[in-house]
Image 1 (cartoon, rainbow, N blue to C red):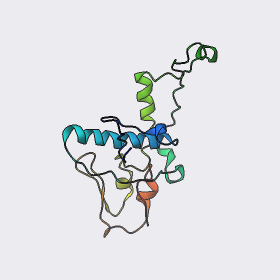
Image 2: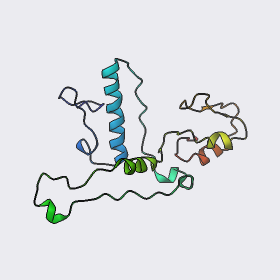
Image 3: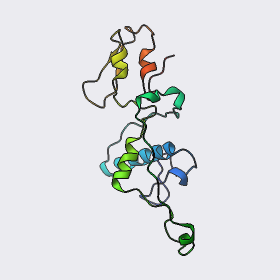
Length: 162
């Protein structure tokens, strides 16, 4: 398997627990890399490789920014039913509404999601809000006084001050 999840079987990609038992965010990352490779294969467009990012831990996040939301309970087949059919799916998949609810629980760890907190808290106009949604914020370091308010208020741990 290559770095984009492409297996030896043509047109087949793999990731998540099939590659490495770990955090679900790693499986999502594998899916993102595979999706990019599939897009390139279909369109012929070559895109820039996404930057390698480490896992952002809760201590770098501003958890008070996020609304508390409980996980959707997964329904499992009863143990006695499992033994009747060894090929049965033990854990069911989410219904569409449940999948959407779970996706909305994402805290965008380490990736800017355009909340605007850094821009709002910067008193020195060092943070430039993008004109086009989805583009990264720019920082005018010559205006920055190093107060770290942008990094302290960033809910997802995207901004680091060195």
